[in-house]
Image (cartoon, rainbow, N blue to C red; front, side):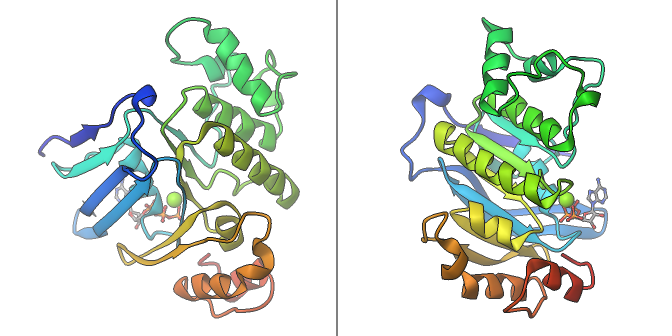
Length: 263
Ligand SMILES: Nc1ncnc2c1ncn2[C@@H]1O[C@H](COP(=O)(O)OP(=O)(O)OP(=O)(O)O)[C@@H](O)[C@H]1O
Ligand SMILES: [Mg+2]
């Protein structure tokens, strides 16, 4: 198989203007054997932009995210991504034999590694759990540690693959607030995979829907965050329709029930 062609962008101190894309795919295709999972994806993400990616189970969201993370072969296709990227998965993937601060510091280079890890943990509200073992963390704390581990690398692109899916509703809402404040402070471009239409609408500048290997819908959300609940009802209904759920009113839980579990 031909090797990956990856265009590295300049380091963080030479960031391009906000309008330049830091991510660019043109007609990107990914096959597993006979099955084409991504079928000619065109995607641009601007510096500092927050993009949410929705799609049914098996539609290729993780495959796309792994491509942007540089974790999968790209078969000679051109994939433009920043040099500094970080990924947070649904499970925190902490090493159980390393203390929390040490998990965050893992692989960090340069001076003051411990101090940087501690600062990142303080930013996610875990300044008091630096020296504990991962098994003693709650689910929300473990995901906050994973966020700290991502942010300490000061990524230009932060990739989130259903990072809050395993958390209870209240913890998830708190995590939304945390992610937004971290994003506002550090301004990475973000691509967040989620099944949750309401989560996508609450957090993102732009929402994409992946289906049949293609991006079948794209919605830019102009309304300020925090004022979106009423303003985005039609958008919510439209995104749900793209996901195969005709549920203009009612809760997301209703929509999931009506979808027969595809969301
Ligand atoms: N390494 C692999 N080898 C073969 N098939 C794969 C591989 N990775 C993913 N697939 C297939 O590609 C399709 C898309 O998988 P992917 O994990 O990207 O979906 P997804 O949208 O993230 O789903 P979910 O919402 O359930 O996480 C699925 O049919 C899956 O079985
Ligand atoms: Mg997935």
